[in-house]
Image 1 (spheres, chains in turn cyan, brown, green, purple):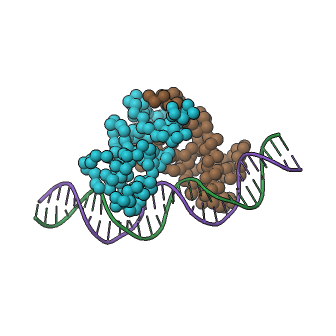
Image 2: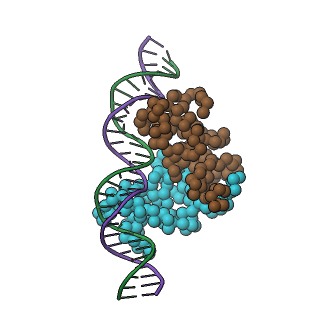
Image 3: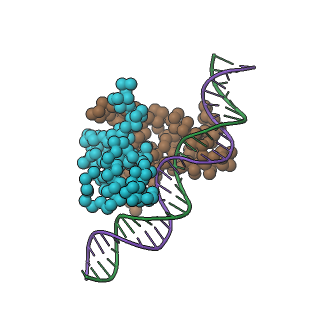
Length: 132
Length: 132
DNA sequence: CTACATAATGTTATATTATAACAAATTTAA
DNA sequence: TTAAATTTGTTATAATATAACATTATGTAG
């Protein structure tokens, strides 16, 4: 919400909007909400999103085509992301767990491929929805 | 490739096509390739895909909006999927690693949320692309 | 400062991915 | 063999994302 350095006007507008939201926000929802602030067309939103992802301010939740603020000081510019997604209420939370990230960052499969990046999405029922 | 039981004609046609492909296939690529077999419109493809995912025959690679055959006899109807994706050649391979799947299936975060399902995508350079 | 390079912007158009809605045909199972 | 459920075929449209290009702003080296 507060002014970040290094960000251009459009990037800041888009980031502000995502930060204000409790839920992941979709690109066209962002667009319709920032029209009053002078952003008129999809490319302006997608460009800002691309940059914000690149610098690690936000992440894309792939299974939802939606965007969330990075809550993790350790995810190292978007290279190691994990989310918990409730299948009922659709709530998405970034998982911050150093054991998990250490495990995955050092994971090696049998092909010898060295991983630079991962994205993990867990699905289940959150506390609230479980008790319904 | 061989006739599977339980599948309808369209489901079988779509599955055959995905099985024949070495790479993840996109929905509209499937569509254009099965027109000669009588599938004319997107909903026919998407319905087949939905069913095939549900029964665990195929997976969706979320970061690519593309579909691959399940290579894993243990992924238990799509509930535990992991992929290795080369950022250069875009090759996608399903990771079959029981340590990894055990670790993730039993993973618990601090919210008490119990996970039923996960999808993990690793990115890096495959052997071939690394040595270029 | 100034000129070059780089990045960001604004804009129009279009490509790509996915679903809604509904009538008809087929399969399943009571 | 009828009712229910599923799958199909079809048209239309919604939702997500990028191409292309002219313009403006910003950063940086000389």
